[in-house]
Amino acid sequence: MRVEDWAEIRRLHWSEGMPIKVIARVVGCSKNTVKSALACGEPPKYTRSPVGSVVDEVEPQVRELLAAWPTMPATVIAQRIGWARGLTVLKDRIPELRPVYLPPDPVSRTQYVAGEIAQHDFWFPDIELPVGCGQVRTATQLPVLTMITGYARWLSAVLIPTRTAEDPSVSTCGEAAVALNH
Image 1: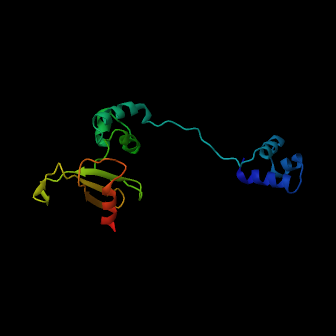
Image 2 (image 1 turned 180 degrees about the horizontal axis):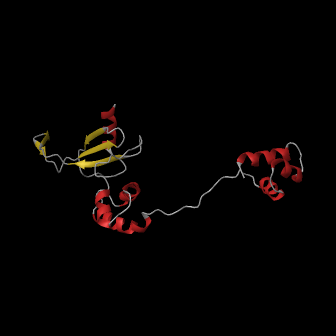
Image 3 (image 1 turned 30 degrees about the horizontal axis):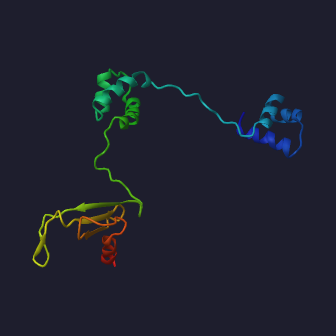
């Protein structure tokens, strides 16, 4: 049944009030066709059962070759599996299979949403710093707290006066960081 016939049957029945027998005569179909068109809530559409591809039978061999060498060209794969058909069908399937076997790209860039992530680290600079009264501090005695945001790549660093604190919830470095940023 065509979509136009389906729509006409429904229009004649619901809008014009025609009985099923008269609609069947006007449209030129059986009463059962009219009844099924009225019972179906959606227009008819043609669906084709999926048919396999000629590549399906050699796919395990292709996967085996891609597992050994993920960037192997399709022409080389065709030679190794003894492909005697046209290359277009095989060349269309290989790009669908290849990403599974490729290693992750080491230079792909990670995207961050603003305010989503920040990294905090301690840095121990290789210096000696005079702190007054003839005293000198080494890198292990003067840590620097570094902070960088993932989205804006905003970097901040605060020199922490000591590696020990009486209460970890009370920090003078937080006040120093606020003072540096304003």
